[in-house]
Length: 245
Image: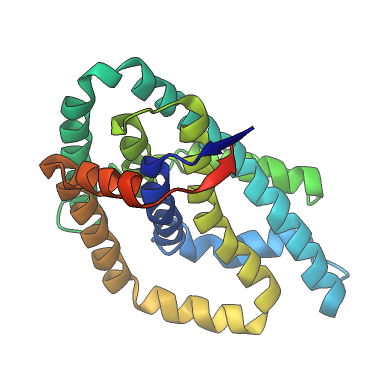
C-alpha cells in the first residue's frame, strides 16, 4: 500500500540525522571512538584489509545494538504523542522550552555535570559480532542521559507533532541513529585518517558544542512560537512524497 509520507516526518528527518551527527561529535562519544573501534575490530592478530573489514562488521553490529534501544524510545514517545494529540499545542510549547534548556546545557552555557554523567554498565562483552551488538545495546542504555540534549529534542518533535504514532516515532529515532552511526562506519573504514580527524575534532569540541547547542535552541524556539508547525503545514501543501508506510 502506498501512502503519503507525513509532512511532519519530512521536516523532522533531516533534523534527526543532524542531531545524531551532533551527538557523535559531543564530548560524550567522540573521545571514546578509538577505544570502541579497537574493541570492535578485535584487532589481535589482524592487519590491513582484514582488520578494517572486521572493524566494519563490528561497528555495524554495535550500531544495530544502540539503534534497537533508541528506536524503542522513539516508538514509546510516538505512542505518547498519539495519546495526547488533543493537547498538541501545549506539548509543543513544553518540549520546545525543554529543547531550549537542553541546547543551553549542550552549548556549555548552563552547568551540565549532572546531565552528562553516563550510567555505565560495567560489563565488557567478548570481541565477537554478538559482543559488539551487546556493547552497542549497553551504550544506548548507559549513555542515554549523556545524549539527552539531542535525543530529547528529536523525541520531543515527535511527541508534539500532529499524527504522532509509535511507527513514526520509530522512524524518526532510526534516522537519529543513522546520523549517530554513519560516522562510526566512516571511522572504521578510514584508519589513520580517522585518528587525525578525531584529534582535530577533539581540539574544536568547544565550537562544536556551541554550534550544536545553538541548533537545538533554534529548534526549541521554532516549536514554542509555532513556526515549526507552520513549516509542516507548508510542506503538507507543497510537497508530497509517496512511500510505503
